Length: 104
Image 1 (cartoon, rainbow, N blue to C red):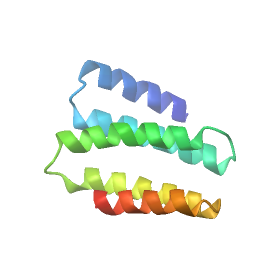
Image 2: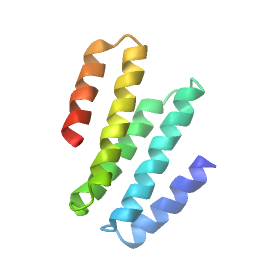
Image 3: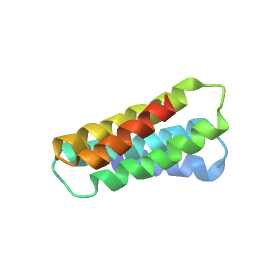
Image 4: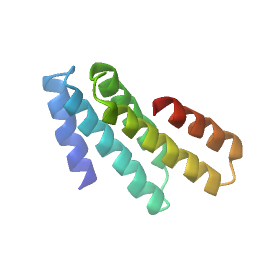
């Protein structure tokens, strides 16, 4: 189901590469895939979230007057920090927490 959301969002982005809403949808779908993979203890969770962050950050650069775009970037960065902290990777967790603060 998440893969279908990603495919649909990718088609929309292909139609209009500068549409922040489409980019945001694609980013959230990819981050959602990462969340599902993490919860299922499957590989590739971090890569999916980082890929989604790229799209969400692109959307935030386009929609500079909507703070919720950057807030989502911060939320996903915080999530990454929490997961790294749970995995006892304190250096990586700290890095993500700092990036989250910058986004907010």
